Structures are given as structure tokens and as C-alpha cells.
Image (cartoon, rainbow, N blue to C red; front, side):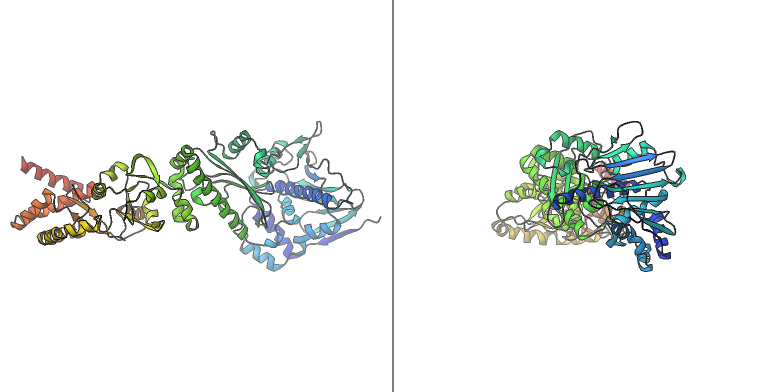
Length: 628
């Protein structure tokens, strides 16, 4: 057999492209070993498949494996496999992809957008293979395809030329030998002949690869570095609960057992496996801007990234686990996930599964659901703002306090089932604490009439109730906004004459108070929601609440000051006395002070903030002194 050797020269654009890949696209030099191991794993997968398909292929598949061998004296590292191998044509086409595609257009696209560039190259052997030049002076590849007799040797310094040679002494499979550059801590270039460093990289990136990765040592038997325990790839009925718990601790670094385990598989055009966990308690950084997410991304058991934001929405950031995709569009370095259709499909399926699991937990395991909601309910409600596609599914698992029970929260569905005959709206109140809401003047008519009110005390509640607006076709209605009329038709008829009389009697006082309090309120009117308090402050139906005003300003957004409405209880002694004093033509300054006190009392009763607390205290003290 004649040895055929070719020395080929890189084009000018190709040299620039290679330099860009080596120095710019990969952010961590350790990934070169991940890429070589991943390529070796692919080769073993292909051999196993081809041996099943081609009965005439005479190969030994009894001990398929990957070997890593180092020579500190020679400063070389070799990764070899006994997989499918490559023909000379494969080497030229696969490894030469970059060399033969070095056009100015491709280079321009890579420079403009590293994340989205050259998707047609993704998954090809040559792409990851070239990452070796980050750490190598010279790279040598020796390979022979299964079923063939000729082998191929490829070598290059990554500079001007590369050599392709046909050889007759190559074993089946592929070996890549890297002539390593000197270790350089300033350039983050580790000593890749160090066995400890190799163990670290394999454990981090390749622990769950299905084939054994063996470290060859000169004086001992090869040591297998990876666990090969990809629980997500095994059927659920073959995995013990203790294995799930151990794996959860591995991926989450949590000391407690998971609250719920979700094991799922996606099949069809796009295949993936997912093993997700809902923790028992919230992590300390759940509400920190730079808090870690919990889902790791693997591609065919090769670790790609932590904290994969593309696979889980922000409001489910507490979910831990692994998603292993069989085929994804990645960038050239496999480090940045493209926002493509496949990823969106996986994300939608994962979200639906997590929400369905929580809903099932609520109906089948009430204690576990209570734990879940106490730990994560506040963050889940963020999804009502962020994820309109799953808004209904989130509403189905929302649990909130209500006046129906002093200790047990309720779902919106349960509230609707308890609604009174003729009730069209779901009533709610927002505030800082349950006690404050229960004692609010706004609650009086609802308590008197026996209407249940949802008590919402999380800051996010102020926002989502405005955004969602309705549940099951029934509007969500704040008891602190708009007019309230809880009377039946018969009650309205019976009270009609009395209301007309009160409207006439209080017309002059209401006009006076409207002028005296013009800087604070936009209207003063009689109330139908008060039974024991003298006054309350309400907003128009579409006004911002005071809490929302403060939230927007805290975020640096300027919003106009919203004036609200002062409602008076026409049967309260303080209000009737104020009307009588006004009719007698009493001291205007004293009446104005009384109006101011009445307004401030109503503001305090709902938990609001006084504009001038010192003045309120002084006026109140003067009034009290005159009564003694």
C-alpha cells in the first residue's frame, strides 16, 4: 500500500477564523477536553448503532470505552476511543469543514454575532476539535474507520498548514494527541497533564456519559473517572427513591430531601429527558437579582451549562435538576443556547409539567402543597405577570388567605364555589398584614352582609390582581375602589327614600369638605360601605393604589400623584355632628381642622402614611385638651 500524504495551506480568511475561535468564542480553556470526550462518546454511539444495523460489520463492541493518557515529560495529552473511527474522506470533510469553509462572509458573521453564527456547523466534529488549539502547540489525530483497513493521520499547528496522511498501522477508532503549551496561570492555562485537573474536568462536564472514561496511569490499572449514572435516562420504575434523593443533593447541594420529583421524557421529532426537583425550602438567594437558577443543560449526557435560563422561566427559578437534549442548536462553543423553536417547545413542556405537578400536589398531598406554597407561593405569583400563556394554570394553584377561615387559605376555585347567590365579582383587599385588612373600614359592609373577601398581603399581589382582572369569567374587584352596592333589589327600593334625604341633607357639607380638602382628595361623598367607622378613603375603579405608587417610585419611575375619594358614613355621630356644626355656621377654621382630622383618621385606618404626622399630632392634642 502506498502512503498518500498531502500538505494543505489554510486560506487567509481561515487563519483569521481559527484565531477567532481559539481566542474569542470559548470562554474557558477546560472545554477542549469536554469537546474531545464528547466527540469520542459520539463515535462510540455511532459504532454501537452501526453494528446493530449492519450485520456484516465485524467489530468488537464488548468493551467500548474512552481513554485519557498523559505524559508529563513530553507534555502530551491523548484522548482515544475504540468507536466508529473516520475514513480519510471523513477527516477531510469533518475536520476540514472550517478549513474549507473559510470565507470572508462566514468570518464576518462570526465577528458580528458569536451567539448566532454558523449554525450549520454545529454538531460537526471539526468545530469542537479546533478548541484544542487554545491549549496546544500541535495537534495530531490518528483514526481508522470500523470495517476499513487504511487509517488516516492528521496534524497541524493551527497556523499556516495541516497534513493529511494515509497510514496502515492505525487501530480502529480515533485518538487525538495534544502537544500542550506550558501551563500559564495568568492566561488561565492549567497543567492538563495533572491527573487531578483531568478528574475535575471529567467530573464537571462528562460524569454522566454512558461510556466509561478511563484515566491511563503508568503503574496501575486504568481508573474509571465518570459515574455513568444518568438517572434521567433510566425508566422511573427502575430508579429507587434513595437514588433520586442522592442525585438531588448532588445537583442542588441541598441538605434536605426534595419535596417533589418530576421525571419526564419528550419523544418525537425532538427528544429529551428531564429530571426536575421541587425543593422543600426556598434558597437564600431566591429574591436576589443575581440568584442562581437550578436547571442544568446536558446534550447527550455532556454537561453544557449551569443555570440554563432558556429552559425555565424566572418565576420557577427554584426548580432544580437536569435537562438532557439529544439534539440542540448551540453556538460554536456549546456555551450559549440559541433561542430556537426546539428550546421553546421544551420550555413549554417543562413549565406545564411543573404546574400540573403542583396542582396534583394540592389535591393529593395537601401537606406537601402547603409547604410548597409557603416557600414558593410569592415567587410563583410573579408568573401571573410574566407568563400569560400559563396564567390560568397558575391561577389554578394560587392559594390566598380569606375571611372565610382564620387560618386555612383558599383557592380561587373554592372561593367561586362559595359565592353568594347573585354575586358576580370576586372581592379582594390588599395591604401589609391580615390584621390590618380585617380591621379596615373598607371591610365593614362586606362583613355585615356576609361576603367573603380575599386578603392579599404580598407586594406582588398589588400588581397581578390588576393584570389578571378576572377568574372563571368573574371580575376581581378591590373593596377599596369604586362604589360599593351590596344591597339586594328589595333593599335598594326600601332604602331609596332615605338615601335621597341624606343626599340633600349632606350636600352643603360635602361641598365644604371638598373645598377644604382639595389638596388631598378629588371628591367627598357619602358611603354605602361603612357601618361603624366615620370615614374611609377609596380610589376610582382604575386608579393606581397608594402601594403601587410607592413601588413604581422605588423603582425610579415617576408617576403622577393620585388623589383619592373621601367617603363619609352618614349615620356616624362624628359625621352627623360635623353636619350640624356646619349648618349652624360654626367657626370655619375649626371645621376645616375637623375635616383634616377626619381625613387623617381614615388614612391611618387603612394603613396609609400621613403627609405631616407632626401636624396631625399637634391638632389632635389641641382638640383633646379642649375637651378636658
